[in-house]
Image 1 (cartoon, rainbow, N blue to C red):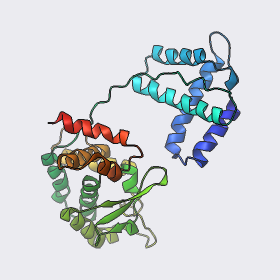
Image 2 (cartoon, rainbow, N blue to C red; image 1 turned 30 degrees about the horizontal axis):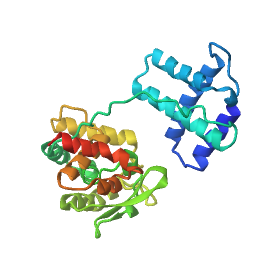
Image 3 (cartoon, rainbow, N blue to C red; image 1 turned 90 degrees about the horizontal axis):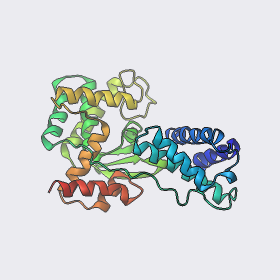
Length: 289
């Protein structure tokens, strides 16, 4: 079974270009599946061709018996389905035993968003301090709120990705997809210009460093560093609920829809591969009416 699993992982790395985190999640779920097959109560399963629909239903029932959340079970089932889709395409199995396997239904909850007042308070919070880091924090918060970028997208930005004269930022999305995000908010453009002129030169220790946002060591800001920056300024702004980069992404989407944007436009700005992912924001907009 391991040889087929290794071939599947190679396809995720090469053909699909999945990130290391996504591949690690697939491996974790599929290794659990393989371990279950080895200890199947009726008979151990060592070859994919021996996996019947009943064996897969037994695996699903075992996950549910262990008390996993529906979302976790659905993720593990999705990993197993992807694995067998690959095996069927490669001719390893003559038919896909997961074809009739149904994942548990997940109730999608609308993500929390910040109110316009909370966004304003968050953007003002860095101005309570002075110095290079305060200007950096204001610039990155302004950019997150004005673009809806993911946390990884923001920390991988480079200086050359900005075209402030045209009001554009080139963003590296999932699976290497790039998109241009318009930045029309004057305060965001001003904050970015001030950061580039008055802050970044003081943070940079290496003239060859091209990352846009730098930490106090002059290195590229990390995901964890960005989370801590947002958390500290949210607390300073008196926002009691947890605020994460994704909270700002959701807030950007909600506020854009409230201003009359269409879902297809929002899909393009957020970098969603499928419109179905964007539909939750349309539901949020209806729920607020």
